[in-house]
Length: 321
Image (tube, rainbow, N blue to C red; front, side, top):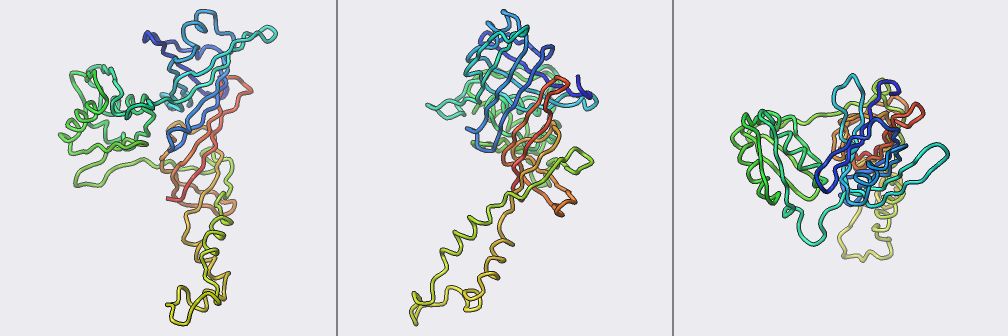
């Protein structure tokens, strides 16, 4: 493993049997965003045997991609979804299997009607349960640090529609002074009557930050705002002034107001940070260009592999918090 990097690809077939192909050469890239439909993965697995290909690396199989570092404990879940296409070809001495995956959600009924079968060992926590549900449904889990405080000494088991699982978990969390909020994109644990706790990832050149580029659409903002400016000829004498004369005459000053108040966006490249997710809060401190502040991850593209020449980085689209 190159520089203590860890990459795992796990597959679970329709019979519930799981295989971990981490012992093979893997290269994968995935995209995740706050918009659920924009979640996909392409992966290449070298020299998987016939049994693994026929039983696991086929359409419909659930796959999960993990990446991280040996000295940081368990690697982070980068992606989870279902295989939609699989091809295996011989390339010289190697047998190369390529898979494409998407995070699928029912199109004919709300995701809350999705059936789940959950079984957790004694002393598992609400964090374990919620992260499992979030991975299955493609929801972004937030506030899991607090959910870890709700421990289930006898374990936690549930079979049925996920909406009922949420109701039961909500009751479990209420007993600990916490609440549960779920929408189409995220799953949030929060405290009642007290400050909630959410982790912030600090990205600097010393922690793997490789580059920052301003991606704010200044041109689009200028066009949309300047097009709304009324011309002097169109203003009737009795019309109330929409803008002051100074604002109309001084376009530069008007634009400066627009750009100062609008949300800035940045494209960031960093080494893999296992705990970063869509909707994660990240604090950027980048001396080149004096970029500093708190941002939300809107979209992420991860490229990882376990070979000595594999990529191991993340491209993040950030929105000013």
